[in-house]
Amino acid sequence: MHKRSDHLTAHDAEDAQLVARLAQGDESVLEPLYDRYGGSIYALALRIVHDTTTAEEVVQEVFVRLWRNAASFAAERGSVQAWLLRITHNLALNEVRRRQSRPVADEHFDWAVEGEQLMDPYADAEPARALWLRERSQAIRRALTKLPEPQRRAIGLAFFGGLSQAEVAAAVGDPLGTVKSRIRVGMQRLRELLAEEGIDLESLDDLV
Image 1: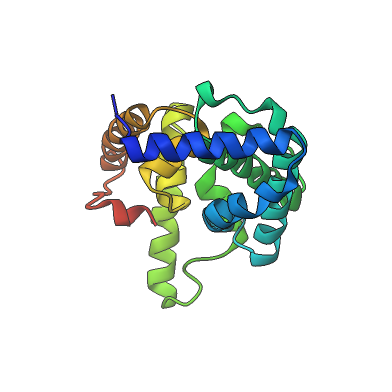
Image 2: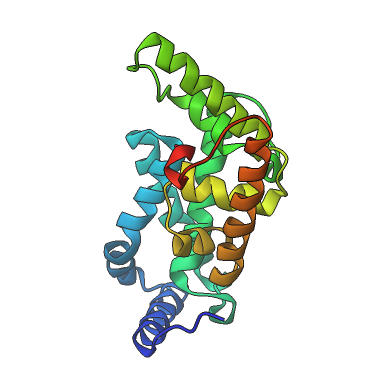
């Protein structure tokens, strides 16, 4: 089990006190909370929506939710940072779904498919190489759909979303050790599935 340092524990306790003050009507605490987490919230939103304006709107909505729902925060369930990242994760996914104009169940959200619809990562490549890269990307997406949803989501956030494993854990609300295990086991299975199609996933960078 991952053990947090005393510094982080004290930091989390201070955050919890700020949120408790907000729940009592002290809006002055919004500024320090924004200073601490506004950047990471924006970064997570941008990695999901791939649009600066939309990411900024997500950040604003996250802090509106914080202001409205401060009383619902329970420190025993996790840190303020993890809570805010979960809210960000959910709001950003909702924005992607809304822009795609089709309902997508959260448990079936396909990071690879949705990300490529938002922008073509191979547009600047030579035609022959672009074709090969797209075919490989399609094979990776097919393999990803065969993974259990928790593994697929963790891999999607880490490699298509660009998050660290700690950020993935905070975003989905699961222990860091669980997320690490899901990524490790999922990547091993992904390599096996791709090998069946003659694709050697040499490194994790081959995912993106």
